Image 1 (tube, rainbow, N blue to C red):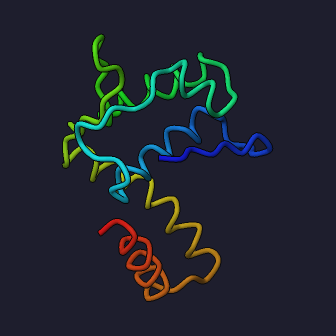
Image 2 (cartoon, rainbow, N blue to C red; image 1 turned 60 degrees about the vertical axis):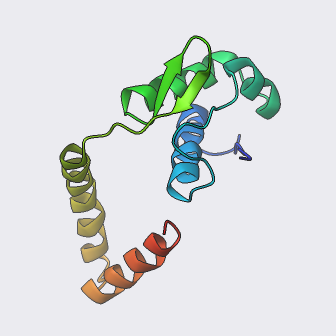
Image 3 (tube, one colour; image 1 turned 90 degrees about the vertical axis):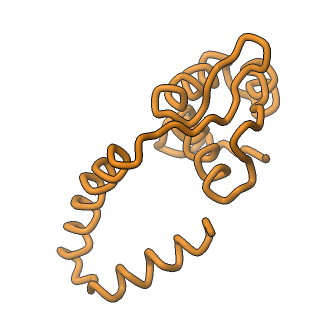
Length: 122
């Protein structure tokens, strides 16, 4: 998996790392049980501070995408409760859809967009 960081982005680097790893899982680039690079290795590879990678891994662990093992390091381990995830998606989508509604984006355009994005994950 290739991780690229946009140092000019307003988005924090650790969030970029989290999002790219989640995208890697969703697109089947990385799978349940796969090991991620060590904190030091990933930090050296992408040119960021080890604390930044450590923070990303901590967030991913807290959100249920990875487990941290002394021997294997960071391992993809999906244990997110589906109902909890659906409720979080509902909260986030309400805001996104409200913004779209204010810009006159139709229900059909939203459906088409969701279908297009979701096709990347199947």
